[in-house]
Image (tube, rainbow, N blue to C red; front, side, top):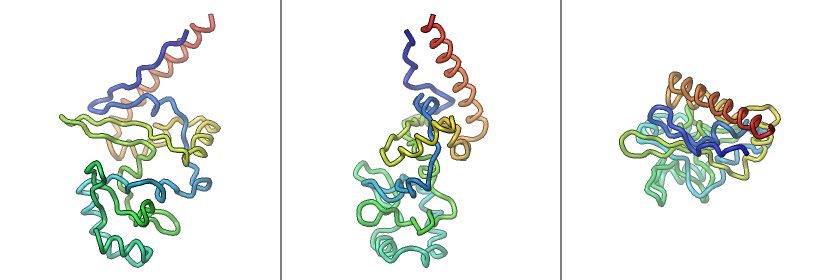
Length: 193
């Protein structure tokens, strides 16, 4: 019988849920039209540095923002603290990101949480970070496309993972992923005997 994979592995100071390695995913923006930017109960998590960057470009993107988004930013700023106390981008009418334009994100550089989505990051003490795959029904087309194209989530999000953790860390993640895949294949073969 094939044994269960460990639910997590550690790469440097990052705890990675193994679903990020084993699950297939390739965003299909034409199918979902970026619904992750317009649905949900809170905005995208942001850091203080990202808030400062957003505020520095606000005058440039202001004319492209919807009037309802401008009103929210006027009232509460570019970000707020969600019920858990995490800083998130401001939203319109309980879900739509204020920086969503007719052709996608108006920001010249998306917050890292947006770039990493559907991977969610959780920070722990001592510099430890956890990554998990956030499954959401609006991403079903991305899961189907990932299966069809044979693209694992961590490979689809290579650029975002490198942006967040660096090339060296990503290379270490790839080595760990290959070890997990070999283990899965060997256990499958063993199970077939």
